[in-house]
Length: 330
Image 1: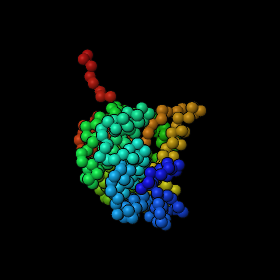
Image 2: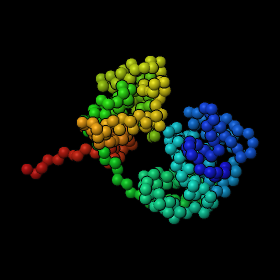
Image 3: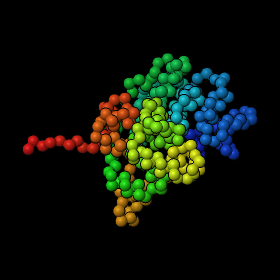
Image 4: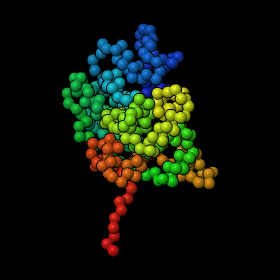
């Protein structure tokens, strides 16, 4: 696919794919437009595009490697992850797209890391992770002889330590809409990531509790019923619209989208930090509630299991941030 000029909108879409009257459409360099899928079915769009382009060209440039990765690897990931990774691939395309895959060397990636990391160190690390996986696939596809990024140093970033106090939580809770309050409560009680909360459906419930397989790690979790959890789910399901599949949802009964909830959260934080208010709090991120859920738990093993971690070490190092109580000598 041609590199083309940079998009002004919908930058997460593959090259030559556009939105037209509620559908994803592919515009080949020569020939007629092809409708791929309805807007919202991002994975279906990628699969249809992969089938359309099944006669793969030789991988003579990194741009073509990125294209194949986007068509064959991204559809296997969660939809929110697909869009995030598609945006990162577009950033990588601009720097590496014209390069022959066999000419990519570690100093090229290190130079990208240092330049990108000056303003966005976290994004630089994430994009290098994607580039590394692209190279892994390129070796499998025969586009590279050896993986050029093995051993490449990442930018060291200390773990985030923001702890949301009970006062801050209750303050924001009081400003939120009834449905968003339920989202907050589910985040605190379960420690689930935002996307997994949005995927919870009525059918996930049983007499034993709420069962879900997390999207990031695939961990199967069963949250046993407690009075607090039952109450939150009942409160959510009482809210309109009554006929819906999802436990928490937007006004149309559909799961919150990433962009939609980002807007809701931004407005909520703006209210909570408004200097015109008599009382304000320090801004925090929704994902900080996962850290609060782990930190407020007395038993570290329970915290580990709730967050679906393979070991308690990562739970303690990244998510349990309250100071440890120690006894003085006298």
